[in-house]
Amino acid sequence: MAIIIKKFEKTNVNEARLIWNEVIEEGVAFPQLDFLNESDALIFFEEQTYTGVAIEDSTNQVLGLYILHPNNVGRCGHIANASYAVSSKSRGLHIGEKLVSDCLEKAKENGFKLMQFNAVVDNNVHARHLYKRLGFQEVGKIPSGFLMKDGHYEDIHVMYKEL
Image (cartoon, rainbow, N blue to C red):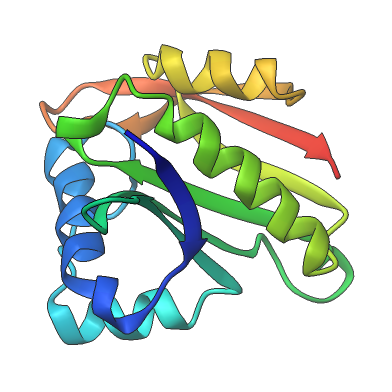
């Protein structure tokens, strides 16, 4: 299976939206509570600095995606932030690593100097290990910073990487 990362196109909106909403539904990684409908999804994905999609080359199926945007404005506008989503059917294929690596390159191309993750959920061990393997450093931990779908709270980690 050949997986390529490419720029989001309008034709990807429904598959990307379904994957994004799947992560929201799981309630263990994204802070959002509201699902994206098709028209909102198109606006959301297109208004990002960059949206990348992981595509299975032979079928053109979207397996995952990321959004890249500033973490803040003005004097902190050089710091990027990103979110990643992989279809539950495609997990374990190292798509997350491909998405993060591509995102770091796109962040540099778009003039960002740092990448910061504000809320990496403590029990998202695979993501935390991936980020550390790619050179991210942990700045600190916020106790009970994330409300899980089942109602309990998990700590969140703030991480960053110089680009």
